[in-house]
Image (cartoon, rainbow, N blue to C red; front, side):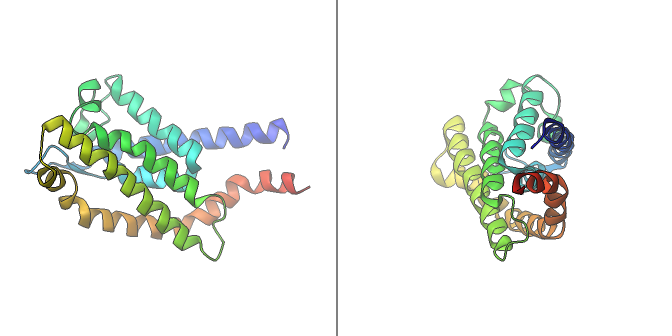
Length: 197
């Protein structure tokens, strides 16, 4: 692949990375506090999932890192417009760091074959693994930070979110099936054509 083609691809992915970072921020503002714990219902994780699916592991992870860095620097990008290291390393911080695993694993599992016969299964698997990793980090972090028992940690950090997880995964699968093949073909067609020569 020529340097000009590589630069064009990198520029496109950088723009998309910025766009998905903005979407994650918007998703953080769309949040609903719940009375049984500090973890709100938010849409940030939904856009993290989409970032991994559409941008791949590298750029999905990059835009999630950018989101966390902006919040750590004090920009009000976390759920409900919160910000700062106190949030990042507080009771809900495990979920924020879990976003990194969600984006990276989703992108790695889906890969660059949107039209393969098993694409839908791979997308679903990517989202399931991403969410398992998210809550595997978030719930124990919440437990330790707040000194909770396991039942209390699960009640405050997992159980209320299960219906939302199902809905978000279903929506993400639908969006990916509709738009991911065209997106990946547009982004990578020139690169793959060049490599096949």
